[in-house]
Length: 259
Image (cartoon, rainbow, N blue to C red; front, side, top):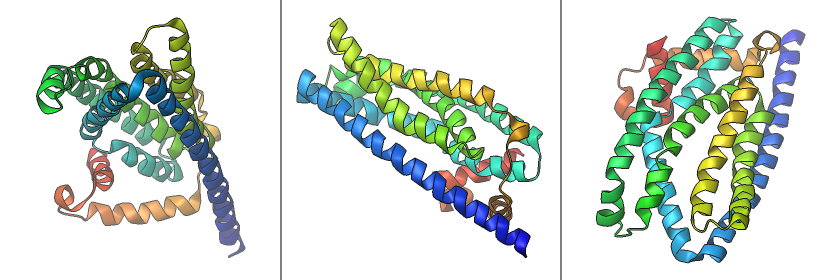
């Protein structure tokens, strides 16, 4: 009984600490993001800011459909198999999803490149949007692989790194890069390149941190693993996932099938 209470206290402490770290990360994220967007609107005009926002929206839709919410599946199953000490299954999942994302990422990028002119001219009637969409299409594979790495770090309870990389470093990189490119005088490309290269920088640093993870020295949370195990059994009994579940839950069902 005392042992279980100790585990519960340990889990609650980690939960409280993680919540605080995420809160600080989100706070900084909002500040850097607002400053970044204000610079775009003031220095390049509301029209460029509007086109930038449209490009983000379009690329975001391609990312959503090509990722299928698989990142949530990794976040959910990594703690589960850590609790069972089944490291090979974790490696299998990450490799399998990396292959899936490689195929879906290239397919989505090619599709967006093909449709860029049609979307810019026919749907939004904004010819200048075409150039943004062409370059933003390369964000798709970057974002997909970043999803795998970030979700894996979160699954390994590296909440500090997760919050720093996803909430702080991305908007901070965007902000620093746009100021640098503005100083270089490359015009509207400052907006496009700062956004794309910011994601690329975070992808590289996430990969480095992921490779540095020592899987043998990371302890499992027993309480979390037990809860996730019970939930996985309920999920496996669902007969109609495609229509009844959100993208997040559907990804968990897909993960279950792959194992």
